[in-house]
Image 1 (cartoon, rainbow, N blue to C red):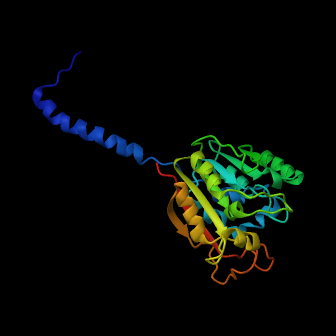
Image 2 (spheres, one colour):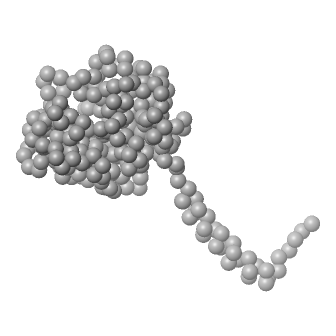
Image 3 (cartoon, rainbow, N blue to C red):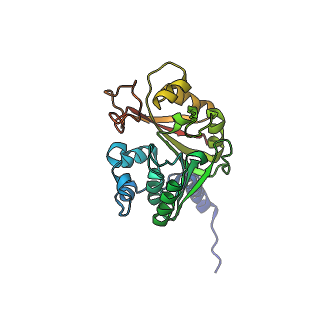
Length: 270
């Protein structure tokens, strides 16, 4: 049977059809990925006791919620961590790997000169718990990442190390701007880069301050990221500590885990 539509009916239907067509993109645009289930990831059984012990001071649930990690994200954890005297390999890689769910993944990068056999063994155990995680290692100069391949990038207490150099650990001088250019290229348009770092007092030569204190002036950090092309979207005082003595080494046992820390959420423009 053929149904015909008269001229008067078309006059009525046209505005309705037009409104539906115009509304369709809006409906699609409002569909967003669900937030990552960080709380369940942190509470998951099997996490090493040394990692669990860091949760109270690092507040990973609140930090990743603020930064906007989502289910299904492909995440990059830069300077994922080393053995003592720094921190455990893969602390955030494990949490993010669990939190992004089965459709997501996490890539953890560690400078080759800081990754020892114990660190490799630790991360192998992590992969056994979280198969969606994988470890890559290279010098900073040789780091190669696929363009526009990450939804979410995290630099937790490590950006200052792009200004660090140390003969004992065979850690050569890096070029912070060249390093950030690689990260900018590897981040998807609209992607997030979260940065948490120890606060240094303003002033002084950045490399000298970092070498002495393992801290960085937030103004320097922000300027570096904005120069690279990222836009500062938000900052949080979740880990700020006005009582912190900014003249102390951030690794000093008297202040470690209690330093004044800035949290920035940067975004790569779409």
